[in-house]
Image 1 (tube, chains in turn brown, red):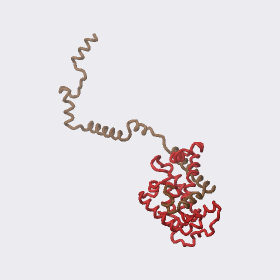
Image 2 (cartoon, chains in turn blue, purple; image 1 turned 45 degrees about the vertical axis):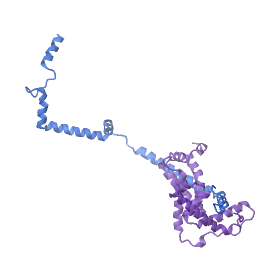
Image 3 (tube, helix red, strand yellow; image 1 turned 90 degrees about the vertical axis):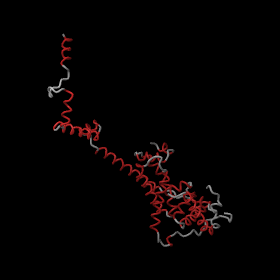
Image 4 (tube, chains in turn brown, green; image 1 turned 30 degrees about the horizontal axis):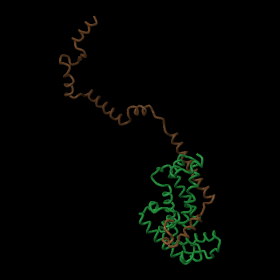
Length: 127
Length: 193
């Protein structure tokens, strides 16, 4: 050992004898230990196979949810949908006025995407 | 994987292979650790049959922990020796109150010139003296002077500081020296040690 024998109170001879006479495992003990090892591996293998069988295939809903970014994204979409529906059914007065402000006052239900002058020009160009 | 290919791999790598179902890894770990675990248990317990039970149980715990083992975080040997020490401590606690007549008799007939017998007689005498030590002193002395661990490794196994390890080994050796002083001559040691 690292300490000299005097530091070890003359015990080095005893320690050396102990190291050289270490009890060796019997063949039976080694067999028992190896049996335990193989049984543990077999059990772990069965659990892995069982979990692979039990794991269900993803449903169409699950695939759709995953496609959209998972349940957090679905929650955002649902909130936006409900809010839109609510605004459609019962729009606040302030919102109604705001929506018509940019489209003139003559006919609030008619919205022209192209002005009348531009339509005339288009007709001239096409002959 | 062939046995030879695994022989040189680190302990934790082989343990990971075992967890992945490698049959050769099971054999390599069994042969690599069972002798050490048995020897350590025997030195802590002084009883071969009990040591075999402890060795099998310690190895069983190794098999069970294998899937959760994280490479590089701890030494397999350190963990295993700690398990052995805990299992031995449980058995020693259960043994308390056992009558002295159950302790093996000292070896009276010192073998003569036969080296092998003399070596065994010395080892037996040391084991009897170890058995009489407080459990923590015995564990520290065995790990340091028979198993050959460093003090920092022993500190990790015993979950104490390095100074505490040094104190335990020093006190243990003094007690062993006192216990064996009267038997040195019969065991072939001269007065000079």
